[in-house]
Length: 273
Image (cartoon, rainbow, N blue to C red; front, side, top):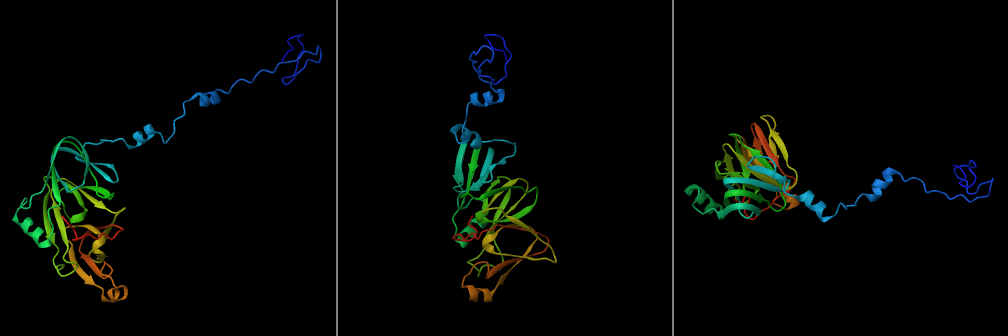
């Protein structure tokens, strides 16, 4: 740096010229371009309304009839008709009509079984074109493509299935005198189904040398071809004084799998449909 008065060479931090005594004005340091960019960039809070809208906007991704908006919300890409759990619709777009299943719809056998189990109709149809959003008390939703397989699901844990899926209400043999009877829904064919669980389920493999025992109130679904028996533990009933799965257990034998949730779900009539 030079003195502006006499031209004497000075240090960068000089305040006075030793030659002529002139006062040296200090220039502000050149601004850091990175800091300038940070200072001039518009600040947006991660909690702003726009940030919330960006995080929660509907995705509508994928071309399957069933897609997950998130772990707890099912998006039905409706173009025709599907069956859904009565009361599970939380929103929809497009031209959609909802109709509660009539008592005799599906045949006399289903009607009689509903009467025997003391249950009223719990299914509805959704028909038309649009997007239908389904949820069930914040339970986690899992989509399964049956691809010709047969699956048995606790009636309270089915939230939707495609129209072409064959279904029927079943009472598990041998369970009539225990817990008021256990009812489930048999689903088979080609197409999508959606089941619900409290929290993240676990799938237990059943093999001929490894039977699986489950609490009925935590049992969500099981594969076809399994032999089901029932076991009552009198000692636990005496000690604990309760009639839950600790005293009454389901025994699965054969080759297949059982889906269990980490929660004992107790409804008015077990496995309502």
